[in-house]
Length: 421
Image (cartoon, rainbow, N blue to C red; front, side, top):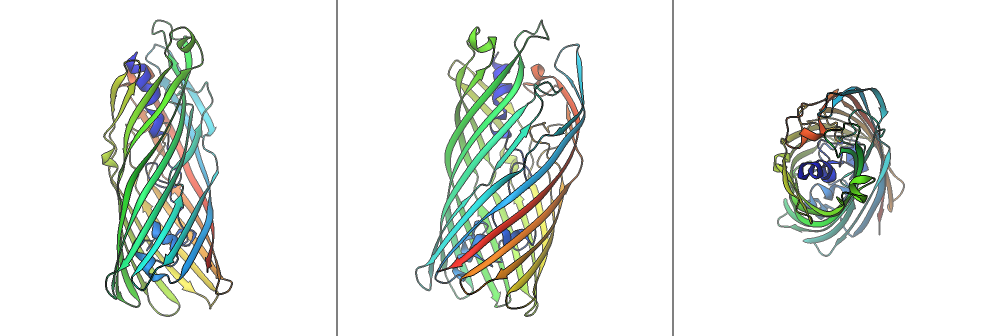
């Protein structure tokens, strides 16, 4: 019975199915950086939205500034040829599931204020993780998941210090709230494969981490940046409820807790103005997903179980270029390579993650000395993902095997407005 509850609870944090980056990261922090596929995001500091990647860049912005916007994320993920065996002689097949993900809008907000020639403060609000995946309740892989939904909000106060004419340092304090919901089918009588119930789990948590950054301006035309966002140790609290006999008769409804360490992120960027018209930039990012080693589930009715995970660190590479058309218009382009955090033998239908390529473009319009507007568009083409769960992983003895092929791609459109007070 402990294994049964672990099956249901494991998706609490894994349901943060990726929308635009590996694992369950969501890149939505800057419409300007979006136009360059986030190349140079750590070094560019072109507006205050770049402070998400490197708070040290705030020293380049004088006075008081505000930036706000939103990102429309339209992913597409379709499962084909799904075949499952739930630990019984019965095999089920779903030929084609249709689209299992849905479009969403992720807002962002930034504020900065220069205290003096050395110190600048800032504040950011972002939605770094968020996704909904939904399958038909009767699809072949329903014991691995039918509904996954997550909502997150992160607020980061920041401070930047100009140590020398060339070097700036920055730090921030991440305050992150996550709310998640999971739903899937469960067996409650191993002797009767038709004896199914539906389980729903909800949980949330508020936890904290930190951010560090440095910006070095080699010349007025060339600068380098490094940014680090720490891991955050989450302790989700919630409950699990069953629709039918497992809740009303067997009394399986209970409160649960789950522990998860979200990964640290290291980014290194470079930015260079070739001349008054052309600029080039590059970015290297490393996400330390290997910190996700296990998911521990504890219930108030005796549940205490651990599920092993096999995620791996991932690398993000990006290059970009910008062209200053005139005093008002700037155009951007970028390309990136983004690695998947999980292989097909551990990939689940909640996170049909795979390697992907980014193709980005953007435009900036300076209306006057007060207002500037940015538009960024990205098309992400993902490799075909495969799920090959053979039923041998801890907990999968009651979920059974699942094999499925996925086709994934994403369209992202970002808009922002910047105001100088």
